[in-house]
Length: 251
Image 1 (spheres, rainbow, N blue to C red):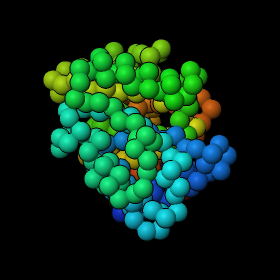
Image 2: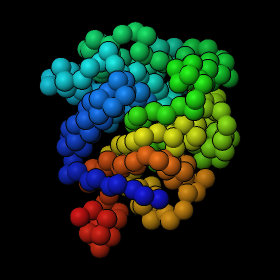
Image 3: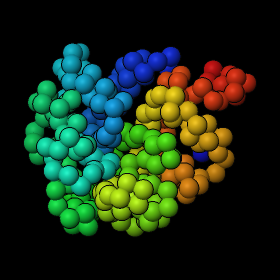
């Protein structure tokens, strides 16, 4: 697996570097194709990135009218619910920028999971005119169990190789989610994993030492065929990687 690994001294610097990376990627996609298609992640660290993008200088630098926003996954709650990934993006980003409503493609967490997944797969099909979705940029988080988006270990969603979005029941959460699938993630032009905090250090160590994709750690299955994979980490997330390895991996 070809990993581009970036380690920052703290979460704040990680957030700043990621915002810069995202803004550059949006500009580049718009320059090349006239539009940028980007999928967003829930979570605390991405929220910090979105807040930064919604402030100066990024707010004025990005051509929001040419950006289409998608979601990597969603919880089965209404959009105004505190657990909604959409709501987090709305509060940190959407409420502060001028982006056309039709460019914001949320997953509908307030309807039945299977229906929401089918609807999202159809939305992607229409947007990409029947071609396999090729997103310019996908932001992903990482769970302590190795899940990313809502691709959890020991769930059918990790096995899905045809549908672009599926409903998934997560037994340990006793909850349904809707998620993009590995075919969509692995067709992306660029993926950024955002990982911060000491609680993630054990799973980061396992992933970085993993030589082959492993279904029990779904994040290791993310490896874009023709795109770039970047791990954006703060130093706390790398504390368990021994010093010699750090010097080799993180020059």
